[in-house]
Length: 106
Image (cartoon, rainbow, N blue to C red; front, side, top):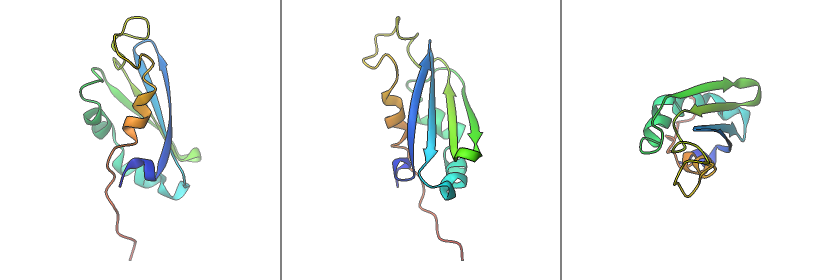
């Protein structure tokens, strides 16, 4: 399944840094997001775009994860030649991440 089946997202940017929040539709899926939407997977998913570090912040009270991605916007809004200078489409791209189906607890 796609991440978009379990969550929605919001994106922000500052300079050459992009930040993507992934918010579970249902709080019961938050732990699943924590297991499968890792820094390593996000970094690999954006390997051609994100040149710097990726940091994950967990927000359990709102069933969300926030990823800060450094060196992600081609130098920033005023310097990049990217079609999406603000990186707003990165949230949609992250929602394409494959999440393994999980067996129900026995």
